[in-house]
Length: 113
Length: 112
Image (cartoon, rainbow over all chains, first blue to last red; front, side, top):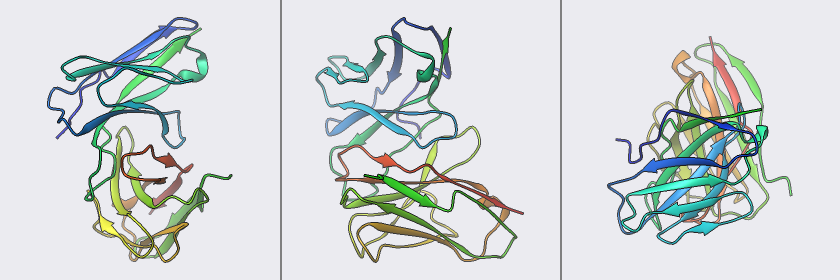
C-alpha cells in the first residue's frame, strides 16, 4: 500500500522554482520524510529528508506542514538537469526490520527551456 | 571515493542460467540493499543486509539469494533465471537505516 501520494507529472520553466507536493496523511511519529530523484536510467539520488522541521541544503528545501500530513520539495532555480522522477518516501527513524525504502511511482518533473 | 559500484552493467541470460551480481561500496557503510526496478515502476526491495555476515528478505526475495561475506561487498545471485527477472537491478548502501542511501548505477539484466 502506498504511504505517499504524488502527482504523476509536473512542468516547470527553467529558472523558476519547482514546487513538488506530497501527501502522507498516515505518517507515524517515528517516520521521516525523504526525497530522492532518479534521472533517466541512473540510480536514485538522495536529495533531502526531515522529521518535522523545515530543512534546506545545497540542492533543495523541504517544507513539512505542522500536522506532518503533507510536504513540499522546493528546487529554488530549476535547470534542465533537474528533469527527473522525484520520489517522496516515508520511512521509520530506526527499523531493525525491512529497512529498505518503499518507492512509489513518483512525480515526473519536466523542466521546460 | 568510487561510492557504490555494480558489476556487470549489462547482461543477457537464457532461461535457467545462473549468475551473480556484485555490489561494492567504499564508504564503510553497515547497511546494503538490493532493489529491482521494472519499467514504469518504482524500486522494490529484494534483500538487504544490516552488517557483515547478515542478510534478510525484502519485499520480493523469491528466486534470489544474497551473501555479505565482506562488509564492502553484497552479492545477488540468480540460481535459475526466469524471464520475469528481466529488470534493472540497483544496489545501495547506507551508514544506518535512518540515513540516506547511496545507489549504484544499476545492472540491466535481460532473461530470454
